[in-house]
Image: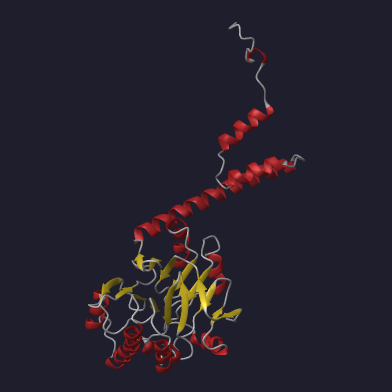
Length: 343
């Protein structure tokens, strides 16, 4: 991983953005979303990712190359290669770093302006599965949200939208509260205490900057809720889970989350279209190969027609009709009678 560019004071004009929860490096899931995105939101060019990202940069660029997504801003989570990320962010404190054509890693905290809205990003979280990980290989202490990051985030003043990986303490999201209450994975008390302290740090910032909406990942518990004072919290699901992808209207700060059935259906339709295009391309290639064997070469018009056929803009029947019109003429007895005498 290397830095390609640094940027501070990020300002984006977007009125609508995509927001995603944890991906955990799941290339297949990202590819499926990329196939559904053009149909779901052709106007969206920016994605905000809420951490547990850990995606291969070059492959991610390739995955989203045929979508409208031109930039992905990552609010880092706990399951990230912090051993690579920290040195890059430390070179220019407070600046975002671009590590591929479209991927930007955000510092902690980060301030952005999107569609005229004040956005605060505060990455990091506590790994409740830390005991099963290896320090320096699959876990790094740099995942933790520090007191300095909390103080800096608060000092930056109010925000309209807050992006975090960790949930805030006092969350109004019922599925998150239920997980925290029941501890279904039976994590040790000491680890749970670290998690609670991490949520308290996010909660402290949340209470201070008072965003209209806070969106987070981490708990793999999709849902939403509102506090008594009207602040909303949205918890996004993980990869292959319902509620992993949302589309956020920056004017209203309302978010729509397409269901899994719609995402899979659109991805399958894309796959069908891709396979059909490949079949057409193979057919054209075979035809032109046969021409070459006969010492023939296609005209510019023929090449243009072939590309239109491959792209699905013209059918084979339409091309045959064109050839017939261009290169044939009615037989003598079928010529149109233009004499006007009806005979």
